[in-house]
Image 1 (cartoon, one colour):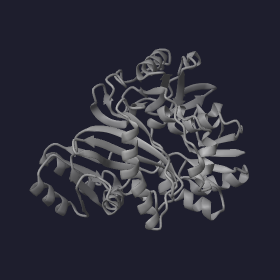
Image 2 (tube, rainbow, N blue to C red):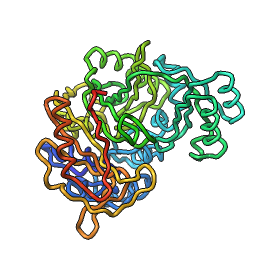
Image 3 (cartoon, rainbow, N blue to C red):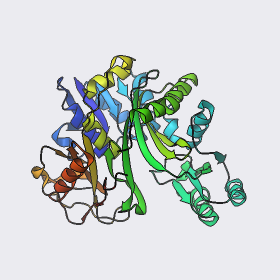
Length: 419
C-alpha cells in the first residue's frame, strides 16, 4: 500500500513515523516533507497547497491513500478535489473545514449547537467594531475571521489595545482577506487544554488531550509562536472530563455539521478553556495540532493506518481506540531570533545520540550536501517518553542537550509545573 502525507512540519513527520510502524509496511511519500521525513518516505517537491500537482503525483505514483496534515490544503479544497477524482483522502472537506478557516462560522455553529463558548459579536467594518468595543470596555478578545497563521487573535487588556488590534486587522489589513470580518468576544480565564477526536461524520472516538505552550519565553512571556512545546496527558485529565467534553462539545458539533449538509470526517481539534463556570470552547481546528501531534501519536497503541481506514469506511464504531498510559513531553528546538528574524542553513549535530525513549520530529530542516541543516524557525520537536510526566520531561531535556546547531533556542519550562 502506498500512502502520501501532505505537509512538511513536525506534525507530518510524526504521522509518517507512526505509519512506518504499521505491520502492513506501507510505502510512504511526503509532499513536500523535510530532512526527517526523507528517512521514512520519498519526498516529493510539491507545496502542500498545490492541489493540481498533488493530484498528478497521486496518479503518477499510484498512491492508494492520502493524509492531509496542515490547514492550508484543507482550505484550498484538496479533499473535495481528490474525492471528485475518485481518490482516497483523509481530511475535512472545504465546507466542513470552515470550522477552522472561518471563526465566524465556527462561533455561529457553536451557538446553534448549544456548545459552550464565550459570548461574541461579529463585525464587517472597523467603525462598528470600534464603537462596540468602546461601549463594552475591556478586557476583550479580538479575532480575525480567517486563517492568519496563528497570529490573528489578540487578547486586549484595554480599550486602546483593542482598537489598535482592530485597526491592524481591518484597516491596515495585516492578515489580508482574513480580516474582512472580526469577532469580538469575552475574555475567558482558566486552564487551557487541546482535545482531539477521530470522526467518520457520525461516530466520535474517545478523546485524547494535550497541553501546549504558545509564547517564545519561559513563563509564557514574549510574542506568540506556532508552539514551543507540549505534553500529554495533562495531570488534570480524567475519564469524567473526557466524557463531559465529548458529550457537550465534540458530538454536538459533529451532529450540527452533518445536519448542515457538511459532514465532518478526519480529526477534530478543540481548544478548550476550563473556567470556574465550566469548560468553554476557544476554537476548533480541522486537523491534528502542532506541537500536540508529536506528544499524542506516540501514545496511540492502534495501527494508525487501521484508524484512518475505519474513518474513511464509516466504520469507526468498530475500532477500539487505545492510548498508552505513558506520558510524552515535547520541547521545540527553534532558531535564534524566532518568531522574528532568524538565520537558516545551520548544520545540526547530535541526532544520532538519541535514546530509545526519545524522538526527534523534524520541521524546519533540509538536506544540504548530505548534511541535515536548519530551514525554518521551528526546527524540530524533541520528544521524551516515560512512565510519568517527570520521567518524560527528563528524557526530553537530556536529549535536547545533545542535539545542537548554531543559535539553537528552546524553552526550559515545558511540563515543569504541570501546566
